[in-house]
Amino acid sequence: MHSKIVIVGGGAGGLELACKLGRKLGPEAVMLVDSRLYHIWKPSLHEVAAGTLDVHQEGLSYQMLAHDNGFTFVYGPLVALDAAQRMLTVGEIRGVEPTDELILPERSVRFDSLVLAVGSTSNYFGVPGAAEHTISLNATEDAERFRLTLLKLLTLASLKKSAQPDAGIDVVIIGGGATGVELAAELREASGVYAAYGFRQLQAERDVRITLLEGAPRILAPLPEKVSTAALELLHQRAVTVVTNTRVTAISATQVSAGDVAYPAQIVVWAAGIKAPDFLKELGLPTIKSGQIDVGPDLAVKGYDYIYAMGDCAACAGPDGKLVPPRAQAAHQQADYLLKTFVRREAGKPPQSKPYVYRDYGSLVSFGQTTSVGSLMGSLKGLSWFVDGFVARLMYVSLHLMHHQAVLGTIRTGVLAVARFLIKRSTPLVKLH
Image (cartoon, rainbow, N blue to C red):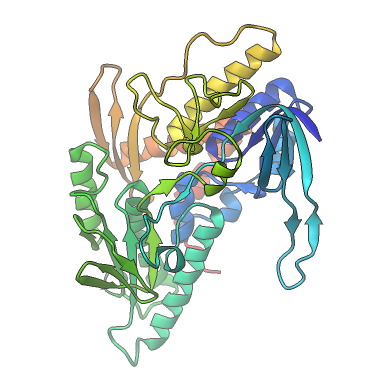
C-alpha cells in the first residue's frame, strides 16, 4: 500500500486532519491508520464510564468517516517504522479468544509524508499496584470496563443490603484534574439514576461513596483559583469527598494508601497524569526525556522534513520555550496548521512562513448534564473571564459540536449531527445492560 500522506492515530487532532485533508485531496492521497474501529471524543469518556452516554450512539466509525470524507482507513496498530525508506508496518488483527483467528495480516505502508498523532497513555509515576489495580480512561474499552465493573458492584451491594445495612461501593479517583473532577460529578449524577431506577435498596449519596485524591493544594490546579473553588463547592454539594495535598503511595485490590492513611476502594480510577506511549522511543526518531517526539516550530520531527508529530505525543516548544500543553484544543489547532502545510505543498506553493503558535482559549469542566465551570481567555494577555452554570454548559457542548462538524464535514451533515446530539443529551440516560 502507498499513500502520499499517512496519519497514524485517529484521536481528535489526527481524525480532524484526515477528514479535512481527505475532503480536499481524496482517498488516493490521504490514509488514516488506527488500532480501533471507532472514534469517540476523549473528553466524553467520563460520561461513558458513568453510564450517562452510550458509546454505541456516540462512537463514529472510521470506515464511515473515510467513505464520507474521502480518505482511506487502515485498521491496525503501528508496530514498526523505517523512516529512511518511508515505510511503516501495521500489525495484524486477531479475533477474540479462544479462537484467536487471524482477521487481518501484518501489512506494509509506504508514504511520502507521515503524521504521528498517537496521543498519550497513563503515567503511574512508579506507584506500586497502580497499573494492576486501577482503570485509566484512555479509550472506550477503559470506560466500558469501568461501567461494567460499577454495574457488577452495584448489583452485589444491592443483594447484600438486607443482611448488611452498610453495604455499598467505595470509588476512589486519583487525580483532581479535569478528567477526575468530571468523572466524580458525572458518577454522582449517574448513581442517583441507578439507585432510583435499577437498585431501589441503595441511596446514592450514602451507598455510593466517592473520594477524589489530589496531590496539589487544590483541584484543577492549572486553572484559575476561582474555577477551582467553584468546582470544589460543586463536588461538595454532590457529596464527593475531596482530599488535597495527598500523595498516593500504594494501591491494592481493596484499598488506596496515601502514607499512613488507607482509603477503602472497590474500584479505582487513575487520572493523575499522562505520558507519551513507550513505543515511540523504539521508532528511531528523536524524543525528549518525557518520551515525546521532538518537533520544530513547523511540527516537523527534527531531522526529517517529511515526518510530523502532533497532539499529546509531540514535544513542541512555544516562543517562550514552554511545551505546548497536552490538550484537545492544541491538537485541533495543530491539525489546522498541518492542513495548510499539506494543501500548500500539493498546490506547489512554498511552505508556511509562520510557525505554529499555541493559543489558549480557556478551559471548561463539565459537572453533569446541566452545568459546567471554567475560564475563557481574552484577546488581551492575561485577561480571562470566569463562567459557570447553564451558559458554561452550552459552551462545553459547543466544543463537542465543533469537533463533530470538523469530522462530519458538510453543513447538512453537521446540522443533522447537532440535532442528534442535542436530542441524546436532552434525555437523562444510564446504560444498564
